Image 1 (cartoon, rainbow, N blue to C red):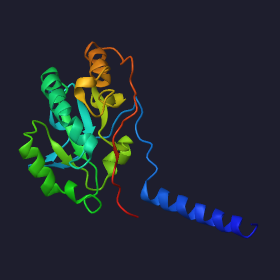
Image 2 (image 1 turned 90 degrees about the vertical axis):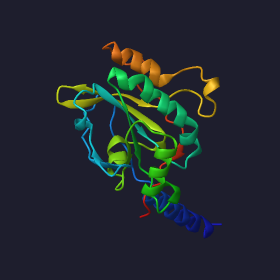
Image 3 (image 1 turned 135 degrees about the horizontal axis):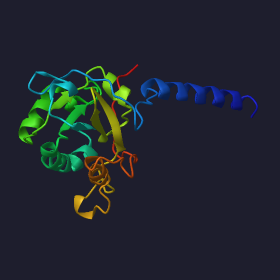
Amino acid sequence: MKKILPLLAAYLVLALSSFIMLRPDVVGYQVGDKVVDFKLKNVDGKLVSLADNKAAKGYIVVFTCNTCPYAQAYESRILALHQKYASQGYPVVAINPNDPSVAPGDSFAEMQKRAKAKQYGFPYLQDETQQIAKQYGATRTPHLYVVARQGADFVVRYIGAIDDNSEDATLVKTKYLENAMTDILAGKPATVNSTKAIGCSIKWKRA
């Protein structure tokens, strides 16, 4: 037994080390933080940044993808959020952080197909290096961040989930994102500014 315990401990350390290598330590932005702008490739081949839209009061930044069942379940709700809030100055910007070598269905070509098939009215960007997902602290698909313009900067006002039912939109009881947007559009801090994102783990690049 004494010989087995050190061996088990060694295996445990190795397993934990492998886990840490496969899943980066993601901390990211907190509510109130200023975000660093980015330039990411859209499905139309053009580079997109937050600064591009001078009329935007802010953005609903959504880390999502093609392949995750949760992302698929929320897709129509994300489309509805853009339709509702873009005219109020808060358009959706969707970012796919998944490594296509891990999830081939999340390749740029597949992103283009899905955006066309689902008629996305918002940019669908590829975070090829995964640097933006790490900066934001995104860990799931979908994972949402509302950023509001403050002078020349954009500041995080909400982080987390869209609502409280990841499977069936008809069973939603609390619309976290919409409640936060009601406060933000009224010029107030979101009463609930952070919730737990529920979805698939981001497919990080292999070490």
